Amino acid sequence: MNLLLVEDDLNLGKILKRQMEDHGITVTLCTTGKQGTELIYSGADIDIMVLDWMLPDMSGLDILNQLYFDRISIPVIMLTALGTLENKTAAFSRGADDYIVKPFEFDELLARVNALYRRSHQIHTFDYSYGDVTYLIDSRTLQCGDQSVRLTNRESQLFELLLRSAGKIVSQDEIIESIWGLTSNV
Image 1 (cartoon, rainbow, N blue to C red):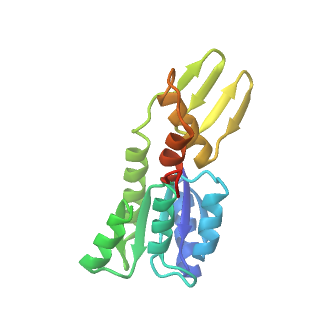
Image 2 (cartoon, rainbow, N blue to C red; image 1 turned 90 degrees about the vertical axis):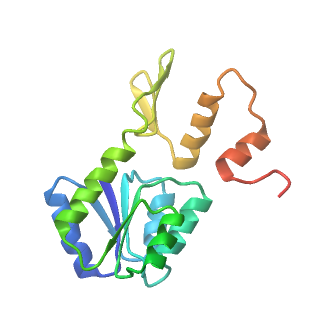
């Protein structure tokens, strides 16, 4: 499992990284929202993100909004000192999958990370094949013979749209609406 940890408290981040890695989880630690979003948009393989709300350059909520707007689906656990009902509902309404208030117990965070990973990977349990070409949904990988290429988030969204529409004509407007959430007259 590849976990992106966006946490501005470097000491806490290092402790969580070490503890997660002790449990077999690969962790990339980013201490700013900019670092985290750049990693996401680079197409890095991220299975789960643990996201702090209060970051030095942007809020975790801003990151959730950006991901939602760009239709990037990454399971997210908010890990923050902000614990009001209003905070929690704001995060959930913007796409957070879980919410943990600091201070917290590591074992609970680990259990929630593992549970969210299991749930998020049960959604797509099949792959597409046509001739000698196979598309592995979970890893967003196209394989042809002994060659493979990993698709970016947008590429995989487009490819999956075309797969779901096999045998049908998909217009440019449909693609723009489905992948970018825009209409062509914008």
